[in-house]
Image (cartoon, rainbow, N blue to C red; front, top):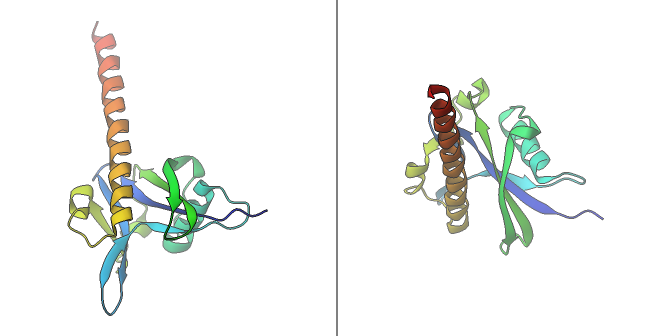
Length: 150
């Protein structure tokens, strides 16, 4: 049996510490959101986001580069919603092209963007996970440096 779910996520550039968001513009409003969509039969959340990134941006992301953050039941979608992110060491050229619907933002800038409440919460959690990972790396780097210097 096919279990439907929704997967969404961001691309995160570690060098500029910016995230890529989709800008949705209608005649009456403008809002920002993460890349996302429903799974196809047999897909896991990472594969769903991988496919969405490929379809939307024509960027091939290795499944191992997609980091799960958390999941919850989304009442609005009536589906389980998986939140993930991709950490980029180098931004692919396709993601730099002038694209009116995709824009890079810092996490701080997202606080002022028109984003729905749940997406804002998802971005806060993603940012906390990224910050925790960066702190872990700093501690390990400092420990490695200290052991070399002794």
